Amino acid sequence: MKGVYVLILRLDESRDIRVGKIGRLHFRRGYYAYVGSAQGSGGEKRVIRHFNLAHRKNAPRKWHIDYILPYSEVICAVFSETNEKLECAVAKIIGEFSEGIKGFGCTDCSCESHLFFTGKNIMDEASGACKGVSGNESIIIYPNM
Image 1 (cartoon, one colour):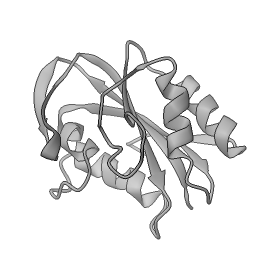
Image 2 (image 1 turned 120 degrees about the vertical axis):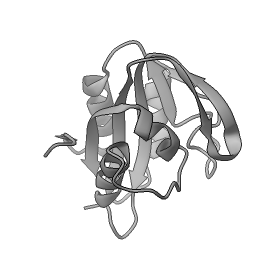
Image 3 (image 1 turned 90 degrees about the horizontal axis):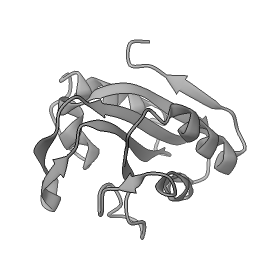
Image 4 (image 1 turned 180 degrees about the vertical axis):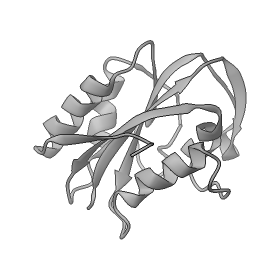
C-alpha cells in the first residue's frame, strides 16, 4: 500500500545528535512529527523500517530521520493511502502549528523541513492533515503491532 505518513516521536531528554551531512543538531525534550512518503515499491514497509531502526534492528542509515530514531520512542505512525506524493502538503500543514527543524528530511524538495518539534503528541492533528490532503481516512500504526 502506498501513501503518506507522519511518524510521531518522543525524546525523553534533550540531546545533540549528528545527522548525516547536516551535522550536529540540538533536539529538545518533547515530541517530534516527521512527514514522509511511502511511494516506493515497498509502500508502508518504510514505516516498519523506521520502527525497526528505532528498536536497533536495522543498522544502515539512509535518511535524516534514521539518525534520531535510536534516541527516540516511536509513539505511532499516521498513514493515509494515496498514489500521489503529498508529503510536502502535509508538512506545510503541520508546520503551521509546530516548529520546523530547518533542512531536515527535505533535501529532495523545496520545503523548509519535514521534521517538526511540538510540545505535545499531535497524532490527531497529523491524522487530520493526512486525511485533508489525501481525501482518505488515516490509519494509526503502533510499533508493537
